Image 1 (cartoon, rainbow, N blue to C red):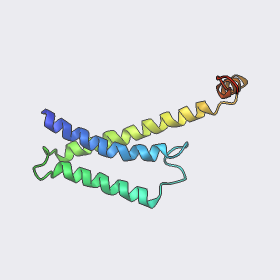
Image 2 (tube, rainbow, N blue to C red; image 1 turned 90 degrees about the vertical axis):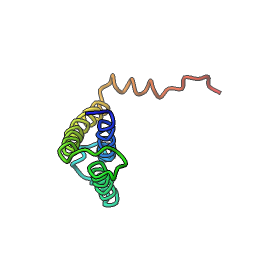
Image 3 (cartoon, one colour; image 1 turned 90 degrees about the horizontal axis):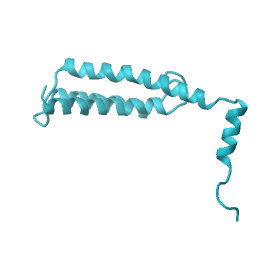
Image 4 (cartoon, helix red, strand yellow; image 1 turned 45 degrees about the horizontal axis):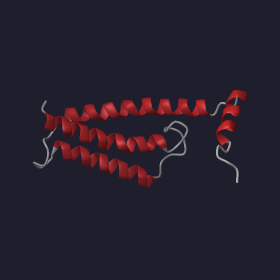
Length: 118
């Protein structure tokens, strides 16, 4: 695979993963739980991902084309990674919600004014 085809694959990965990251980052819980994304966000993501996929498979001479199999592999890669990202996000939020005395002392320390008082 040459550099131009690799760039096309990376473009598709960025187009797909960008919106999927929006779905993950919008809530502290799993992205599969309520609140669900608005219909506007959902449909704009679906349409732009579909357009990007069709563009890389049928590029009209603008970029090197990739096959449907390669596009499918990028989709599978991105979908697998949203579950990994979501799992990591949920774990980090759970860690940040610890209410031990040591944690509360650290939070109080970060709230202190470090500059001179006026």
